[in-house]
Amino acid sequence: MMKVLKDKLYLVALAAAAIAGVVGWTQWFAGAPAHSDGAAVTITIPALSAEAKAGQALFEENCMTCHGPHATGSDQGPPLVHRIYEPNHHADISFILAVRNGVRAHHWPFGDMAPVDGVSDKDTLRIILYVRELQRANGIE
Ligand code: HEC
Image (cartoon, rainbow, N blue to C red):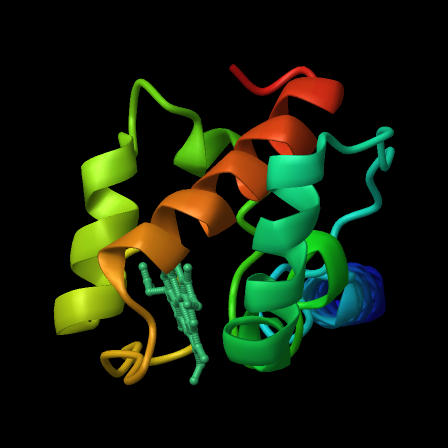
């Protein structure tokens, strides 16, 4: 009888330890850095063409608050130097439409992007040149 009780206690202790282990693991996992708040990436910054430099100035004025310095992302918007935005997946027209019409959140947890006033299609084309040069220098093409 005593022996059976001891065995039972042993099993209960084992189960408790297993649960504690799982909970601990889940908490550790949840705390691991995820791309949920700061999506920022580290990139190589190339020597830019004159056109891309003009785009950089426009980008810094109109896009950087959300897309971060050199389009590396911030806590308010995603990096554009990212596989998701390679030319095959997000062609130049998607940049023009994003600036004209805004973007409904679909890839990231940052919320919608509002249309950006005061940036012409021509300005956006310069910004695209800048972003594409950054992308190419980081193997995204
Ligand atoms: C107020 C913040 C904010 C500003 C300013 C902003 N963006 Fe965005 N942008 C976002 C967010 C957030 C997303 C991601 C939406 C998603 O897919 O979840 C995004 C997505 C995009 C996309 C992807 C579009 C698509 O089809 O998925 C492009 C391209 C883009 N932005 C370009 C720009 C350019 C160029 C500028 C400056 C002229 C700019 N953004 C300014 C917040 C911003």
